[in-house]
Each structure stands twice: as structure tokens, then as C-alpha cells.
View (cartoon, one colour):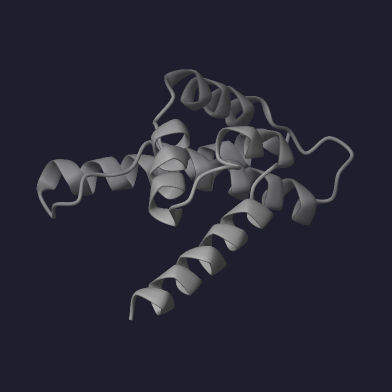
Length: 118
């Protein structure tokens, strides 16, 4: 049974190393455990960065249609909004404050769309 786990570990390690940017390999290249690599990457990159949240908000509020098509504009805006919502997620409860916050996010999205189509 141990041999099976070793093979699975090697497969997962290979998948991780082939999926990440090459400049990140240095810190994990000699790792022997997929779990250790996963934990390391999670620790480094699974953080809510205030500066990223600020920059996303700025990009969303300053994005305009310009000379691009509406579909391209909307796709870019949708990607930015999804990343923003992943960083600033709504509370998980079904309380009034949570519903108000979700409503606020939805209104902000609508305003962003309309604001950019000047």
C-alpha cells in the first residue's frame, strides 16, 4: 500500500511542478512531499492582499469601454469583479447584514458596468 501512495505523491508533485510558473520552482524543486509543496504554495499565495484589493477596485472604477467592443469590455470587467469578490467575499450567513452586503456588491457591479460605457 505504501508503494501506491508513493506513486500518487510523485504524480501530484509532477502535476504541481508542471502547473506553476517556472520562476517558482526553485523553492519547491527538491521537495519530496506533494502535501509540503501544496502547504508552502498555499502559505505564500493564499492571502488577502490589501494592495491587490485596492488595485482591483481602482482598475474596476477606471475601466472604460473606449475603442474595445462591448463584449471585450464586459469580459475584462467580469474577470476583475470576480477576482475582487474572491478577495472581498460576502459573509457566509443569511443574516440581514449579509444580504445587504451582497446587494451592495451587485449594485457596485451594475454601476461599474454603466460607468465604463461613457
